[in-house]
Image (cartoon, rainbow, N blue to C red; front, side, top):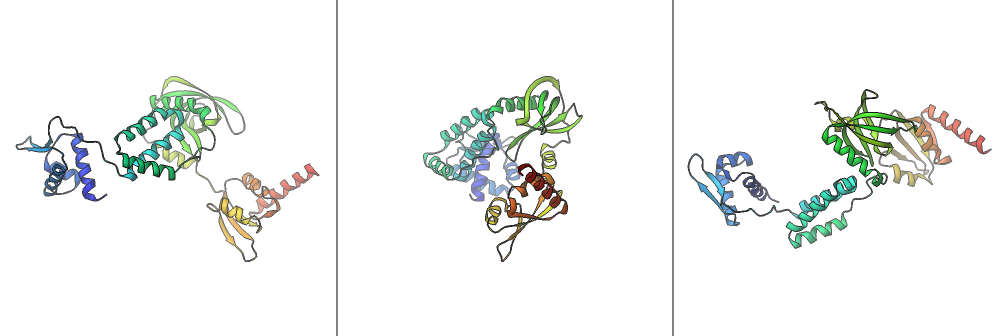
Length: 316
């Protein structure tokens, strides 16, 4: 869409927001000269938009009284973005925004012309987003809805939470935000039991009870910054492994986006990647058996040897 078309649509939106405008104000809003504004006004009149001008200190350009501007005009790409955005929200949020997603798509169907709606439908069939969640969150949708309402209402919640070690605790939490990260839902908030910020995986919350206790989010708190800091992958170790030729294509296809892979003439592959813990790295190496051999770091070699000996003793 050309700049002129964009500015004409912007003019229509400005007149929707306020019926009377001075040419100087319109010029300042759009960043053009008053002469250009007069030219744009003439183009809108040619399109059938009934505008008129009034002289005097309180005059300006205005719409004819009682005239209702036509709905906004979307390009096929813009309409596709709106539909896909609505469907994306529906997939991630589930029942929480189901009614809103249905209403938005119904309104779009109502205002779009038939040819554009068919073009958007074709684009949706060929541009599909699915499988975003790491698990089926339908059992937790009522809980997510409750947490969302408490976040909006600035009310504390009481959680029965089961951590990674399967230990359950009861905590009063100030819920700051819900975040969807790497296919999983998390609650970010201030834990009054630990007196510190915490991140809770929603599928580990066993029970949530809304409380009438109010709270205030600190002004300098940014949920996006906190998530980026706490849920980011920390590369505490650099692992270097040698991979047999028969499994190299599989590893390159599955892990090539985060591994540095070096191929050798004999078919062997050397891979370098970061690991947050040696426990995880040990499990990954052992999952490929003798097809993967650790070169670095030495402590990982020791852990793999010890684990392999323990497995051999168990099955000996």
